[in-house]
Amino acid sequence: MKPRRPAVLLALSVIAALAVLGESGRVAWRISQSAELARQSEPFQASPTQPVATLLVAGDSTGVGTGASSPAQSLAGLIAIDHPLLQIVNRAKDGAKFADIARQLEALGDQRFDAILVLGGGNDVIRFTGHKALSQAVVRTAQLASTHGKLVVIMPSGNVGNAPFFFPPLSWLMAQRSRQLHRLVRETAADNGALYVNLYKEKAEDPFAQRPVELNASDGLHPSDAGYRVWYSELNAQADFSNRLAARGR
Image (cartoon, rainbow, N blue to C red; front, side, top):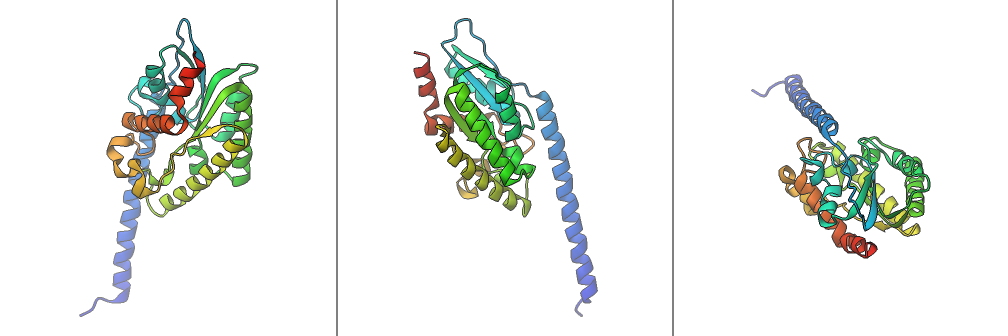
């Protein structure tokens, strides 16, 4: 005898509810992990006695290095390993959106740097910053960076939709918003003489989606030590960053 339709619908509803609760529990755990990683994070800075060049890092938690096992394993730390005589000033803050990054640059006064590395955008994707507000903040950031740095590189977060932190259908929306962010940053960088580093990849080509345990931190949102090494590789491959820094120090 076939089960009655109401009974089938009830069973499906229970299964769906359990799935939602399971995902909610996973998300709650990852949110707590992300908060703990942010609490433990500390932006890497370097002050050699006789620096040959100066670098400013501005941005969000990825500029801080949240998710790395130590500040030395963050992107700024990896840069310092290759450039021990580079002075690194790090103004990045956990949770910063592009509007906050612009304020980080506004607070510099008349300071100038040989290079400025801007890392951000993920919080604008996740927290649904409107297109107009985001566009204005990205433009303001690029303009300010160009007044304070001889070399400006803007490196938005990768495809947030591929982060293990998210699941469909929210991950699809995050991917769409990430594409929009990268399009905006790419065009703005070109208009302001800055270099743009593209970390956006579709899931099939994204190493963070193909090697999630290795490249993502425990919260499934920030890069791990290995993840930051992938980013550093992209920074050098796309912007020739190490060679450009070395040239500034000659």
